[in-house]
Image (tube, rainbow, N blue to C red):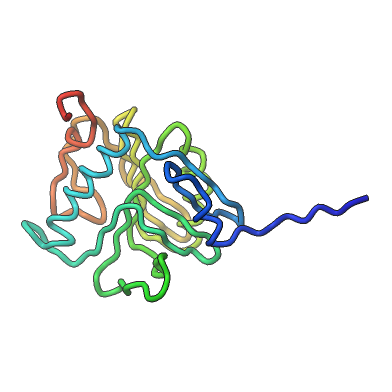
Length: 190
């Protein structure tokens, strides 16, 4: 009888993926996802702009945040790539000598696609709770919804659910109003 040896995924395995894939290491396994749809990209880019100007750049808002699209973040041995992540500036440390960030974000946003919904909602959400990310947003660009969650005693508490054309002030970004209608891709956005 032959024993099968399961090779542990290492960071360098991410370099072997085709350019049209996003790689993550979850529970020691390489998880590859295709590049996102235009609906997904539009929601992420628009939200990044909505939050980036007042929070990262301090234009028309309070400043005090570092917000990045698709950063590689080390959660212990897991390397995850959320769609957006934010750190309060006083907590953020610039990565030195590696591609990934080791400081746990204060806020994460995942934008679900049909191919990623199970990973985002089950595996990654559990890892984010385990590592004490304070806030999590889950955006579904096809259903046009935003779930806002906060971590309480190690468990996610649903703070609010918004949809379609709502104008929201959502934790942790309550100082500005976000018009969700801009997140949803329309043909005239081209």
